[in-house]
Length: 250
Length: 336
Ligand SMILES: [Cu+2]
Image 1 (cartoon, rainbow over the protein chains, first blue to last red):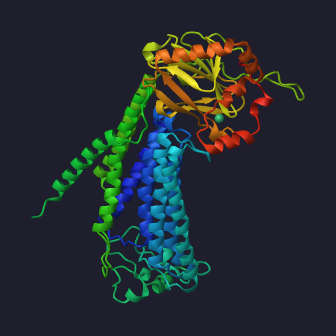
Image 2: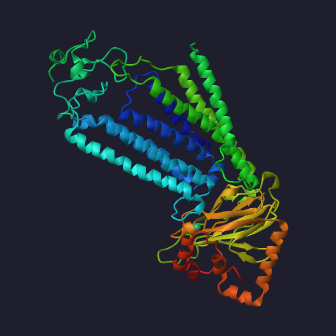
Image 3: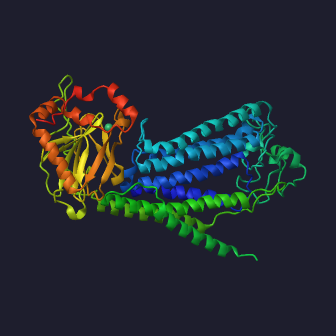
């Protein structure tokens, strides 16, 4: 019982760590960020019901019921699908060289978030009231809540349409992404989008770590083209050509 | 007037605590609690709900406040301040889940013990005997059916089910009912009178012990209003022991996927006053002794019980007429 619940400790540390990361930051509320925040929001609900389900006396009641279906979808759908969507919005520009359409992305997020909660939130209550899982035949007293779940699934199904349309259309004629549309500090944003064969045309030089946001150590090589001119190179920065010239030949 | 942020934080903390405490007691999410065991489980659930709502509001609140307060304004291309680590904060947020989990874990053990989950007498199960076999040899029966006589404080098996309250350990229950799960019905036999029924009748405020078996595949005997559930396992004995506290009709549900018509494997539990229960039992005994009825019963023995299944769904009636008759293959000898 306690050994099962103990997983809540590292999970709690992760969630509080994510919250502390965005607290005090400068959050760009784009589709990728919305899905990332939606992921935290949904994953926490699944984590909470997970601790409940680990308590054996309570689990005797909800085992094999819709409460379990609700719990696992908050963890699995909220915890993985939201994360995957977030990652796609974040790295689509790097993979294809083109940006995904933001308004469509936000429509996709709102529909997914509403659909997910309409589908899976009532299942907690269904399970507590006495609806078991893996059945197609249920007591008529559960009809209303099941109808809400059904409406939710339709919204969830429709929510994929703006995403698919967005991915298809943007891949062909989306806005050009450039090397680093997010002004991110990690390595992959130093190369072209999509990355060239063998990744880099010239040897990249790292002058800042991936978490050095706000420290003033931005690498000019990673700035988007339009703003590159007005960013001053930090002291000690060696332009890549010189760095390559200075390094011994392989 | 600008309110200092630590006062705001304190105020938010107080409101969060009050809301959690209130919601933990007034969520109204659970169905009626019809037994003492249910009241215990609900107490545990309410405490977990209190903590959960507090955590839920904290996390969602921080997310929403961040989204509003720390969003990037248009035209602002600078980064937030670099913050690297905060040891006291990290200790606090490691300690919070650790302490919560520890308290809930100990509390759960306590409730499980109070419900009778650790009743050593509940372990009547003989366990499974492994039999070595040569190829081609016929199986003499993989399960040792001769269960050894139950010894006091036999701790060698974990109880399969929920036994007596700790104070009632070793005392036989007031009412004993044998429960047989089969595809797709529950059959209840009252060993004292030989009465067989497709619906479970029990007297209110009496300690009831259900001895649960399965005839064919795994089933699970679930009483949602009693917060009790126990797998019915072929070849193994399990039990549920509880005290019903409210007169009424409650669903009995098979909670373990057991075949195509698993969804229709439901019946009713009638908690009756002692007089009503005795009346029902006498009626059943009379029909058992009626020679015409007895012959009819022998001919269709378990089906009679199965056919009294409550048809709460029109589909179910339709299914019953089309489904294969499971009892025609193997008829348990419930009537002599
Ligand atoms: Cu079943």
